[in-house]
Image (cartoon, rainbow, N blue to C red; front, side, top):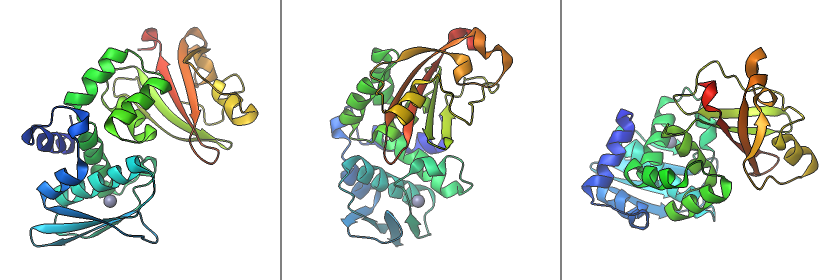
Length: 253
Ligand SMILES: [Zn+2]
């Protein structure tokens, strides 16, 4: 686990939290010295201003509780990791921070993911599910009161499954994260292959209700990809963005 992840999870164990419904993010924030207020903001989703040993996190009410909770946890991350600075954050799209060189923003996202889905509670739930599909992941997201994207990113992050989580739109590849153990040689295609279920969802509106078998060469560059299979499922996010789960064959490792 990263240093940042450990710090966040330490807060959870120190508070004696033992089930997802106890993850009251505002109470955790308050305990860390951060008071949360809700106020319409322009140009950002959340701000943090510190005064001495207390801070105020202002959260833009979004109507999406998972998103608001992530914003609060993100600001608690800044307060614990980057004290002495003020922040204006666009935490509504954490995927935008995946490749960001804004180190503080990625660290605060990482902190938030561990705070809201601590390994001690998240990992056993995932283990019970085997290779979770989107229906199961939505149930996990409901339990932790997190967004589906944040939950899928955390699933890759715990590195217990051979998974890649990716996002595509009608122009092709947007972003992806791999579980750490996925070999670096598996490069996702930038242009969506017509054989993928994701192509069918984006171009024909055909929903993808289950994890389905797919030849790996529909997804990956490389001559030997045709020798392997992956399991694919996709779901519409917003606008024309589609979130994809890809489970790799054990032989691809
Ligand atoms: Zn931030």
